[in-house]
Image: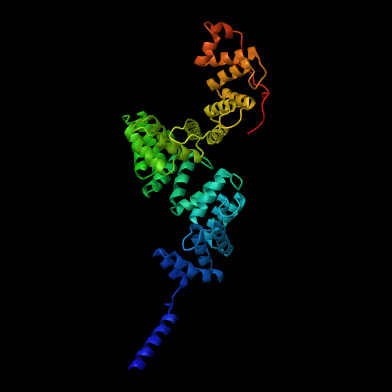
Length: 446
């Protein structure tokens, strides 16, 4: 009897093996990964990947990229994706393309990104078709070709890729890359919206099919609210801005704070900045300078110039954060380099007063001039002072008067005080200051 049982067991194993029931390490790895055991998945996939299995190579790259079951190593992730991509694995080709596009684990190379994304797209992988379409739309790594962008987005949209449907709808609305067709724009946006894409819900809310313009109505705001409730950060920001200003709804600073906070939590830089201002001023929320400074810092890190200026000011004043003039100077430089006139002026003040670095009146004048050329009246007044006193430039009373008069014409209070009781007569025969050569005086430190 025991002999018969052993024989039956052996026969069952043989039948299972011959019928395809043998254990599949790739499938076992997937099951382990889904169960939360990435280390076991790695152990199962590693021999397969080394033996040349492209699926295992792709999955191994994912584990290294995410740092799951193994130490995070994006360079090794890219190496495995490259091996799978060269064997024609479309998802590995897509991931490799994105790695080149972002410079993640490999040197940034938009042209190489486009090459791999196209290989994946030609195999019908919709995310790659979307990415390739957007490259053609922006001319990044490939020659700009909106018509070709539309073709690739259309392929992905037909495969029901939400991002592609939304992008295609916006292309039909704008007419970029082909005919302008508002009916098709609405069709694609509605398909994406009905499939749950909050971006499409938001874009549809902004589109007025009768005029092809942005809708600014209660109905439009209701649609934007729907996108916001679905978690779309731009919609959440718009709702916050609406409640902050009373545009389309009754003004309610507390509700503005609630919506801005939702958008800020998702990394929306302008929402972070606006919310920081509300915390700094105590509008719609208890005043909290530390919270404001933190929000300004996070938005500044995302390159939002107004937040860079606000955070630099907080650092310089010790407002909600430890006072640090050197960090304030560096942050103000970023905001000025981004073209923000008030930051240009503030940077000039920091150079002139030696706040955060050594005094350099020549550089102060350079930044005052840049701000003044953009219409910033305080910088015009500062230019007048520089010419009047020979700070960073040769003393020139008439040129000083030109700058004071220009500032006065635009309503600068201190300029009016300098000009005295009858500024109109003093400024009557003076034209606005003309563009001049770089001012002399001072080092050229950056």
